[in-house]
Length: 484
Image 1 (cartoon, rainbow, N blue to C red):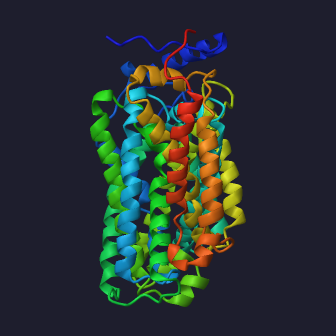
Image 2 (image 1 turned 90 degrees about the vertical axis):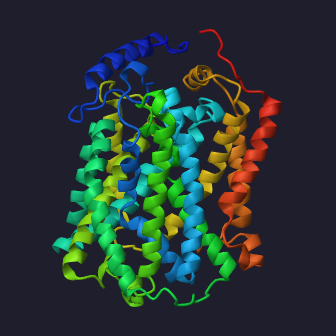
Image 3 (image 1 turned 135 degrees about the vertical axis):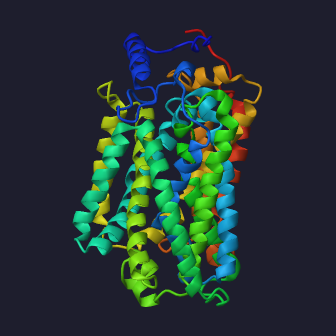
């Protein structure tokens, strides 16, 4: 017997939407050929479906693409690390990002809610506009543009078509899959995985066959500092998926939550760590002039046999689509968490299309700027550290609160908790101001000592976490359900 839903604080027309959503959701079921209805509404337990192991391919396929490879490339080519130093930084950074992803993935089956809706317990209904807004912009615009560009580069190199036409094709494929939603996305990732996995294994074998793994680092940046910058980039890339985590587990029965979370974390760790290490190896053999002046995908594949180069370029294009259907889908979830209201039946799908179109314009703008990769990958963790600190400390402080109460609080438009946005903003401002180490801005700490590298994400996490715990005690946000 399915338990009754938590007390609702919604207006009458929103209750009508909820009833309509449940009816349409029942028709949607596990079909991959129907458009997922509604938006960010809770998934009732009697409509849950899927298998825990699906989360492994859901998170493997999106990372089997070039942006993942490039995180390893920049560690050797731009930061001057040796292969082994870069590999160690990658494993540490990806490991941290994968562990946090496991924790967040657990919440989907427990609550049936998207990640940025659950974020409201730490930020309040309106205070959550800060992280939800950032995630909507960064996923739908930033990550979407970066991945679409890499896919377009690869498709253009493979077919000799113009990069603009290739970009249109890549974006069109992404929009169609994201519009259909949850079930088709999971199916697409499962279908794509055998091809992507096989091709990138062969590409890895070819790359390591030509690599010079014992080549020392160039030491352009103090080694400790370069190591920390690379670790931050690897963490930022893996943890960049964290705000999406429960979006893809919320349809699962609660009984599969733990296994699904482990599969999700393993999918991210294996795919990111392996391909970043392959990227580091490729940077020991790549033609430096081609890497810095040509397209990054050409630099990665130019030493491979022709047939393998073609397959790898095709895999890079498909991998970009695999990554971006998640970016558009979850970016749309975040946009809806801002309170955006559009036509009900295809609310999520319409927002996904709009987000993809906006991201597409940005992709066209930076299509001829390969350096956008490096700049983007290095700053993504700046907001993630403070946000993760708030949501994890908040969950720890609510450890005695039952799941149904947490669910009701997250769905309550009257819920207020200014401790979260205050802690996150302070953590971001202080950490970026003092510790950022980027091309366009270097904070006073790394400017005084380059060995500090870039520990912005770590400082932001610590400052925001400690501050939130203190503010939670002072402001006392609600920890129980009030009457409707």
